Amino acid sequence: MGKGDKTIATDIEVIKRIKTGDERAFAILIDRYKTKAMTLAFRMLKNTHDAEDAIQESFIRAFRSLPMFEERSAFSTWFYRIVYNVCASELRKTQQEYVYLDDDDTGNNEVEHTDWIPSTLHEQAELEKITLWEIEKLPAKYSGILTLYCFEELGYEEISAVLQIPIGTVKTHLFRARLQLRNAIAKHYHITTEHPKGVHV
Image (cartoon, rainbow, N blue to C red; front, top):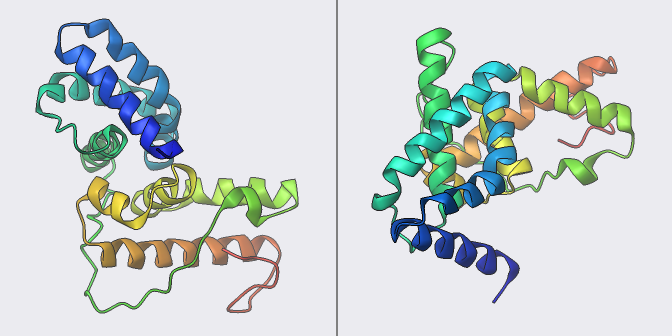
């Protein structure tokens, strides 16, 4: 059993305890996922207060919906979908910034697969800081999907399940998000080339 399988099995064991009446066991899931969920919420909502409210609402919804959770799937994927939907709903109400991820997807975009791992992307702390800052400035649909891919380390299929969009759309928006991010980083160094030297996003 791999490391990932063990984590999923542990989540399922906790969920079974909750379903059989041990509601206090839900605190285990909160401790396990609150930090990563907060990262996603903050990058979408752009401020700590709204992100904290969204996480609280997400855990409430998760607890209430837990009887409907199908144990053959990963709790993390199921829960991130709740967090994403709560944040998207908040954006639609307060900012009108959020746009559905597949609203401008034609289905004809060819996107090459590239691995982008921020922890190994830059050697200089300054460039890492700029990268994180620019991710937070991206539109919610791009900062959210980058967070799922880069920081939550979800694969295309998992992101597709979280956002309930086709894998092709996931690849398209990751490509566009990386392009916007690369261009934003390049501006800090006054680089105008199509593929800035030293900026591998």
